[in-house]
Length: 432
Ligand SMILES: Nc1ncnc2c1ncn2[C@@H]1O[C@H](COP(=O)(O)OP(=O)(O)OP(=O)(O)O)[C@@H](O)[C@H]1O
Ligand SMILES: [Mg+2]
Image: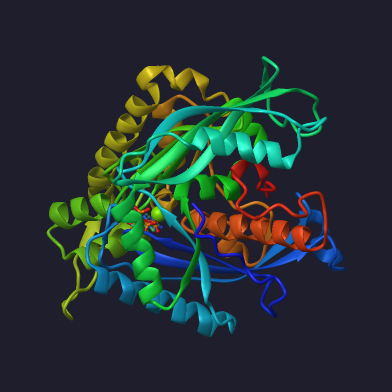
């Protein structure tokens, strides 16, 4: 979705890009600087991708999230406060005056509509303009009044009846058709999120379906082509997105996340949630077979009272069934409608909850697919940030903005896109 706002690329900060990931556990702000092919910075040359020489991550911060539940704003004032806090921290850390952001949206309200469009081609060959027109034609379907379009993703183009074309530019033909997936979200949820950003003093450049952005950061083109499941296990939810032939084709949200693990520990060990969270992070593991059964840990301190010693197995006996249940639910969801056998490139895990020891091993055992933890590619900076799967979402949002930024620069410099307004659909986003 685009708000018609075109970034002033002549501004001093035009190479600064910011991703805002408003999650149920944390609000995360990632700030980066884009180095284009024109910049003479050889140290970033190995990152060159789609005209972007590299994106240097200047800083990433997070603040506890309040007023957001399962990807939806439930309390505007609290959500605004959390966003403000995260942005202020990021400004202090990076020295950047943050004004504009790409923000991610997710939740159970996301839906897909398949559509198609057709136009007559009057020019001797198909150009950017015709492609834009045929995508617009596919976009013109009846969308329920309470929904908004987030993305229009072309799956193929058909030129004079010849199907399976991914990029028809430069081809001759008189009839151009497009088949697209339209991703919609609840208008109220999207508006509430953008309202929170505005109230926190931010201009929203684009609202992006979060898995689409995360995929930009952690998935390779090969994985997306072959078939891959991107599974983000966050605080309140587990977001699953399935890709094949280069595009997202299915997604769903399970209302289970890291918070459920913490609650189980709090109840099981009869300790406050704050201590349970700390114990989970310091000593958690999803598999008993991976720990030393003799090991003792402290239950933590709360309200000034000293904690007591317990065997670590007591903690893992609580965490393991929750992890097993979660991956079984994920498997059921992937297997539904035969998607499991399409995941030729396996599974990529992101989200803070996958930091728990053993999550990838258990995922591989239960899902019966190769599993890896997602790390951002095409960025440079502190490895603690880049390799952290909890920051993958924020980095994806930032990378999308970097691609958009580059496109704008090409527009201004009179490249092939010259004269075409910026409201291009996803296919023209230079992939990063
Ligand atoms: N080392 C760790 N071990 C286990 N769990 C962890 C670890 N680090 C973070 N977590 C858990 O990760 C969760 C937060 O993940 P993340 O930051 O991806 O959530 P979010 O994006 O705010 O939430 P959501 O995506 O559900 O809206 C919390 O429940 C936290 O306890
Ligand atoms: Mg998240």
